[in-house]
Length: 178
Image (cartoon, rainbow, N blue to C red; front, side, top):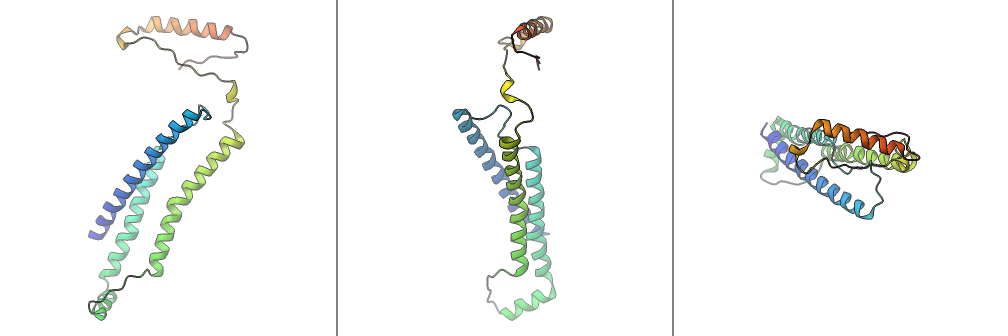
């Protein structure tokens, strides 16, 4: 149990650090993309809840794999016999179980993320968003400087007037206000 808790603490710190670096990296990537101006409006550079939950799950699996298995192995009779045979000498080497765990952890942690990213790029570049994005205009309307100035009736009248004016423009097929 002690090895599991230690592994969980280390894996948790690693996951938190990784998520923090990912968030900072995505924020920087978004600012660079906005400066270049080649990013379509529906593309958002942010961590999803699913990504954070996936990292949490991997953290628990890694802690179990790296903490429970060695703990069980270390408490077995065979391990105690080997420790007596070593007579104070230790050797650092990875056995096949450790190599399998490391490879599995990398495969489970990196491969799905890489595949998901690749699929998103393919969808954006080849398939597109699924609608004619070049035919949309997105805008923001300020209703006032202070929330106390916002009157529901007056706001609704302004929305109706704005919708009527926009629908009267040539080439406009519909208007949505959200």
